[in-house]
Length: 271
Ligand SMILES: Nc1ncnc2c1ncn2[C@@H]1O[C@H](COP(=O)(O)OP(=O)(O)OP(=O)(O)O)[C@@H](O)[C@H]1O
Ligand SMILES: Cc1ncc(CO)c(N)n1
Image 1 (cartoon, rainbow, N blue to C red):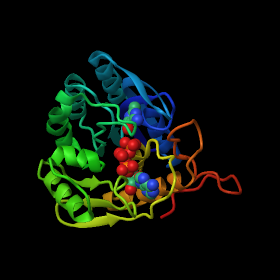
Image 2 (cartoon, protein in one colour):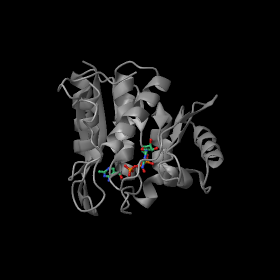
Image 3 (cartoon, rainbow, N blue to C red):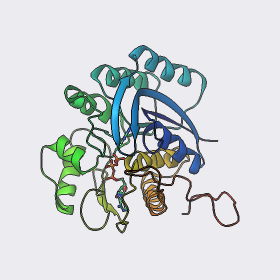
């Protein structure tokens, strides 16, 4: 079985962060492992507190996994401080990590800052060059490029600017744009639109985490990058379509929507 590692923060309500990542890996048929960088106290209403883990235990979690296990892909999510970013960068380089998907998590949907202000540039400098793909949402792409994004043309311009920072491939996500949910993929040569009709639901907690984890799981399973991105879009679309009315706020997506068909069989992701 192919293996995927998530390096991210814990979301106590299970819809985003490490919990979303592990569910996504399982739903897409990959064996999931986790390195926790921070613990958040959050529910569907918001994030209320955070504890970062010591860099020493983050380093040990990564190193002991690589010492023992072949890791086919890595997803990096919430990495809140300069020290945490640096240690993850060192460990990934030292262990020759492959298929790294970096989701530059900055602010939660509820507005809580999950990345320290002073750590932003470190994330760009240390982790972006290691990534096979970086997956900013609109707000993150604006922060990275310093330019306002209000339409598809500006998403494309942002993708080029981010690529020019030394990133191999970029997907600027359009979840926060009005109209259809179209993401812009740029690989340094050409653009591709990952299209999806907007689903009218308030339950979109963890969509970004789930999408980036799906790409990592599918890369681990050997799909080409373009194919992994398209299948991941199909998967997140289904997860939002079947999202769950859990909690009083922004509910989670349904990570297992693709598994529980009428006959109860587990299916391959559709091609
Ligand atoms: N209402 C929606 N209908 C259809 N697709 C959506 C909707 N909202 C988001 N998406 C899709 O979900 C994926 C994640 O995008 P989004 O912009 O929500 O990420 P994010 O803001 O990083 O999420 P998070 O809140 O987890 O940080 C993208 O493919 C996006 O197009
Ligand atoms: C731990 C964690 N990571 C990422 C997100 C996405 O915003 C979240 N809400 N919580």
